Image 1 (tube, rainbow over the protein chains, first blue to last red):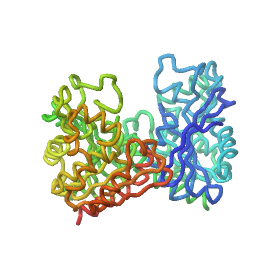
Image 2 (image 1 turned 45 degrees about the horizontal axis):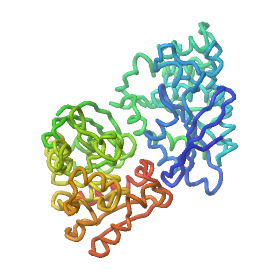
Image 3 (image 1 turned 90 degrees about the vertical axis):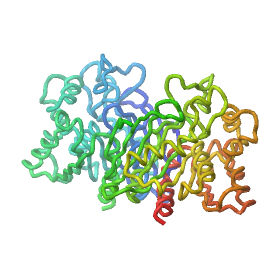
Length: 279
Length: 279
């Protein structure tokens, strides 16, 4: 692991590091914010999963999260959204919704994607192990959240691993890859034509069998361009209602899909996680 | 004037607009944040001047200012840092410290720069007139702040126009273009070889003749790469001491020249201006 940049912000440190990833079979870059409280010992850690096209940098520069992380004394890890580098295959037409920048937080089983695209194992297993070994964080107190494709990642990963996380939340998540064009394109390529196998990566499909431990905190802008075709929060609402799964869905009037929306409610999400992490 | 984008953030609106600039003889792009309080009438307005290489966008996406502007009910205008477009001359070697992205907030008198580079008049006169006519802001309550080259711009503009602004502050400002390589390059080109003429654009040179109305609020990171060669806060400290000019200079331990530094203290600067604007 190599630290590639360090900046002081809100009394803590914003770090960027790179490391060899065994599961993704390439070098990965990742960001971590360490709040000032690390001077007094290990702090809880929050994983942020970004959306389509993002690297580890979008969240770090645009979300305004460090202020709240410093206030509550939590670290925030912001990984990249896909494997990258020479030899990592991309969408044949270099589209922004598949391939590089669009790992979808799944383990690909289909060639050529399965050689590198193992973002599920990376986020759930490999990265926390690396982070816990190299930074002053308490891996027994971790939570997860994300945006759009990363909201999908956070929700599915938490629902499948209730013992690993204290809480989960999402901004404008893709709630059902089985039922939207982004999901269809990604999962048919990464996982193959058998849609039964997609269900392990579909929040709505996971809800019936899920532990009811998590209240799903979800913010969704009403002016989001992707609301009706891709995001469909009503599917999540229906799945939660039908299965009596706790959901706190808030439609935010006039907000869109951008980091302006994310920044506006970042403070509430971090406060929510901090409360669960200290409980 | 044409609105080119609008995003909801912290209950207000982040707008970007373009307009024909008579003084700069080109089209200019500019950002304005309107806080939620505009629904109840005109609000005070804060001008932010960015540093070298920036456009109107850096501040808007990275400074985290909207949260505080919404809290205090002030608008923030973030203009571009130079004229741009076809026919606007740039540094012959396209260096980042002169020409495009580096207007230095002066009125150029030397060819070819004098055909477009009139950023002083743009910030002091043309832009406020346009903003006051098109947005719900109270032009009689305005303040100004900025970063690096923009800190220089804010300080010199306020000191030269004490009746136009209620307060001024700066992050890591260039305090004396007469005494640093960035200033030497810019002013020798824009203003010419006669260094006497540079003094009208040099904070330290303006202090002796300045109205003592303004307490200059200045934050400077101790780990700023440009501290010793370009910024030299000790020159400002000496000029203020010698002339009994009120200065609040705070050296921030470990902070660098980036927007991470700016974001960390943005809340304090906006609170400072809001207090003066409501007094």
